[in-house]
Image (cartoon, rainbow, N blue to C red; front, side, top):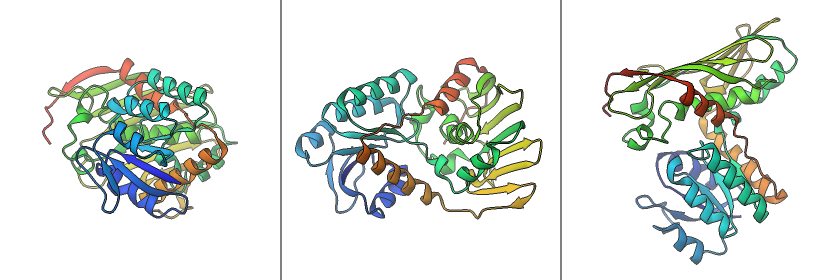
Amino acid sequence: MKIALVGIGKIAVDQHVPAISGSADWELAATVSRHGTVDGVEAFADMAEMLEARSDIRVVSLCLPPVPRFEYAMQALKAGRQVMLEKPPGATIAECHALEAAARDAGLSIYATWHSRHADMVAAAKAWLADKELLSLTVTWKEDVRRWHPGQAWIWEPGGLGVFDPGINALSIVTEILPDDIHVTKAELDIPTNCQTPIGAHIAFHHPKGAQVSAVFDWRQEGDQTWEIEAVTEVGTLKLSDGGAVMEVDGMRTGDAAPLGGEYPRLYDRMAQLVRKGEIDMDLRPMTLATDALALGRRNPTDPFFD
């Protein structure tokens, strides 16, 4: 199937292009970007021009920052194209609902992707927790923003999510592996005095069966990066590390780390399934938790951030 990739930035180059190139399902037939291109692929600077010129491309994958994504996604849907959305699927919950409604009305597939759900051991963790009584769950997601988002000023502007841009990856895993839905009860947000979005966050959640659930996100981590989820149950403790690539139960390792690259090929496998079956996958639970934390969070000013 021919696909167009819109927004040729770091994540597109590092993950989407290799995933498409390595797939038997997809052919990267065009790109849309004001700045980036992919060697050997027809490049457009304007979305409308691409949609007009390439009627043979039936699927569009959007890797733009969240704020402009709605306009591009709606253009694609109105042109009769199936749409794949990089996380988060939009800047607001309302616009995501609007996109899903438009796709349903047009009989098109749309997919809100959460790449961390496709880490190697997430499915195994979900299966292990399915019949356990959860006592507590703690998320520790700490990384260096300068390493992973160099020069990306949009993440500090309204709609950019700040530290919730990586933190939402943790939330996507938590909402996948827990048998019960949770919701935010309170949050503390560290916001640099020269930014609009947080660089750190502490969040507490309500669990319907009384488990203690919390998360710490921090973008100021130097040295080793930490992407861990620990779930304590009545019969043992499960720990996911390396963003879900490794699982331990009571200290016994049950899986080997896989490269991040394994996650994006699985996203494109899923998109191929959705297109073939004419289905929609728009799970917004991770985004709901992130935006609720931003809505409820007490804002604490912290040191200015300079890239």
